[in-house]
Image: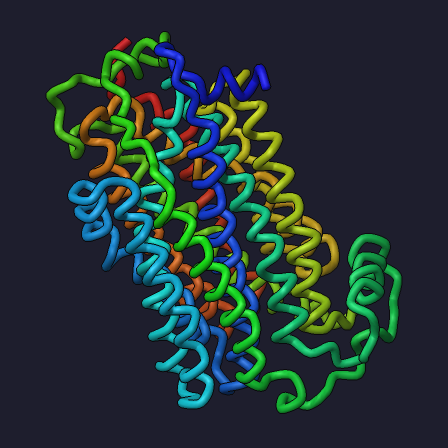
Length: 449
């Protein structure tokens, strides 16, 4: 409780732990919705006979919503406050999830894309509000720790998304227990043990029915409605953004930004916008084609469902561990240097993945999730330092950069169709290289000493 007091208790004695706990439920929900996308690419490739590049339209529709909705979401937050933005976001979220029922009966790709567009318009509102809200629910000096802690629950959603999606959307071709399938997959990937598990693949019709999309999305819609009701009957504190002076005191040697400088003239913010674009591009691209990359290692004979479970209990589990440990480490070390180091490691891992399309490449791909874990919240917190009353507007721009996820999968899919899937991972390699630069150098530019 002492640690919680330090993170959530302000100098005037107010404790924002309970509002923070409620807000973290949103991080869990949108993490789950995001992670479900990672099984949709392979599903639609099979069910609707799409190429890898065409299936990238899944991410284009979802993340394109961020580009279209980010600024309106910021306007909603400024006009109606944090709670108003949350209620609007949850409403869109629920409508988009329930739309999958008629979309299945329409059975055209555009219908599913429309549902994702509406659903992710809601997530745009939630992220525009919730991310900066966590930074003000306590002292300025612990803002980065709070947002990383909240993002840990987001990481839990990322674990559950591909796990539930793989079990409900991908049918297990061999009929084995899913946990046994996961154990066999670990043997093949980490020990190089050959197995016939998953070698017998059923026809596309047996595992690619779009009706399998109804259970996870209807269940998600019901949960979102329950959360919506909780927020309707809960009073949230409208906490003001930290002032330049408060952030400056918290930053100490990292400096204070000039109070009158516009956003576009603040290098630490403008470079954060680009870094956030590239981070989401890299994370989305890796998740979108993790299953393709893994299944394409023919010597291991891994099925779609096994690959999806490996993504969940392997990569996404490391993602959560990284988020949780990052929240602790960041309270003791420079967030910028930690971000730069993690970006550099992932640059090297992506290089290995590009040139080794085998079980070692899969291991590198899984390991990259640990080092991706702190990137989004760290870039967000570093970019918002010293912005004061401009925080909500700046947050809208940072959330808008999630549009990077709309572009990268189609580019990687095109490269995968033209050459091979492992070559496509050069795209996230370049993204992580810039993120490393931002952490080490860019995040400190323009801050007065």
